Structures are given as structure tokens and as C-alpha cells.
Image (cartoon, one colour):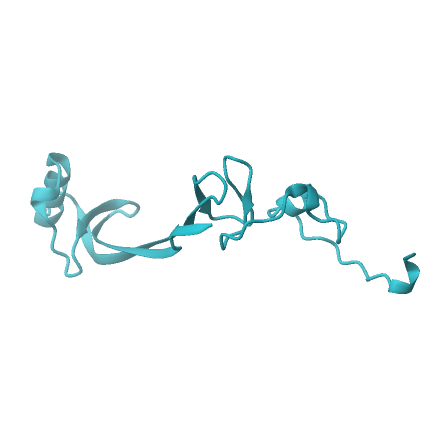
Length: 148
């Protein structure tokens, strides 16, 4: 598989100038820079009026100040399928191309599903149920109990 986009971590930082009602509960928040400067030109008419009313005291609120918010996310690695050339998003334990070929999160092509689990007794359902309960630990069986 040819990787065409590596996994990337993203952080968006947003600053909001906040005002709370003097009577408690709720209030207003306006996008701003780190120093609390708002861009009136970027606001719609209602937001601009609300902001000016908060600043002027026409609305009974108190200024909380500038609050910082962070939004973090990851964009997945993307690769081209070895068989059909389609893009495959590598964001899960097992990633299946539209043509049926499976890849791991690193982009390595996996064996055909008919071969999965034969040496461990796992079934395809066991392997694909990543979000299920963890397996119950069983003591290994000594090798001398097997017929070779």
C-alpha cells in the first residue's frame, strides 16, 4: 500500500469573550482574539447588537473575560489499495477497501479472512469486535496434552 497522507494531529484554539447574566445562568460569548478584541465586521447583525448591548450595559450582564477553548482531533492515515488503487482510510484496527482487501492501521495488507485466527482459536467475529468486552484469560494448556 502506498501511503498518500500520514496521520496528523490537529489543535484548533478559539478565544471567546464571555458575559454572564447578573442573575445567574447563561450569558453571551463572542469570538475574539487572545486580548479580547472582537471583529464587529465578522458578526451578523444580531450578534453585533448583542455584543454592543453587553459592553454598553444595556443588558444586565457582567464581563467574565476571555476564555480559551481547544478542539483536538486526528485525521487518519490514508493509503492506496494494492489491488484496486482506491483510497483506504486507516483509522481502525481493521480497514477494509471496497474491493474486500483488509489492512491494519499502518497500511500493511492482512491475510485473507479465511486464515484469521486458526492458530489461536479466534473467530473473525472475535477479531472484528474491538469494542466488545475484553477476552477472559485462560491458563495455557501444556504442549504435552496435544496430539502431534
